[in-house]
Length: 128
Image (cartoon, rainbow, N blue to C red; front, side, top):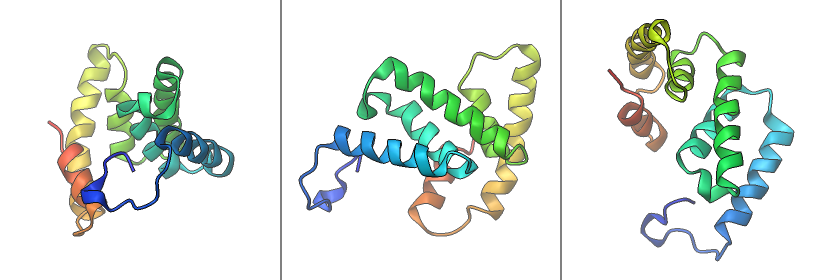
């Protein structure tokens, strides 16, 4: 929805209204799912102005990334993106570098398919 992929969205919509509605719906239904928190938090963190109040949503995005990590601490991608969303001290910088390396394995095993999400994850989350 954020990018009109070659005109494939046929329905005229007010993007901000639709995103605000879907976010509210997701927060009500899926707040305890790590994957929802990660995807919503990440999307909000890179496009906060698309969802409504920029400053409020920038904070909300970081909160959702933190919650995704707290709900699934074994997922190195969630941890990497959460740590990357905040200012890090020296110890956290070292941890961030380690979790970037750990994320490479999960990218190769869990996100190795040919779909768009798998390709996107490998492009964006394959960090040094």
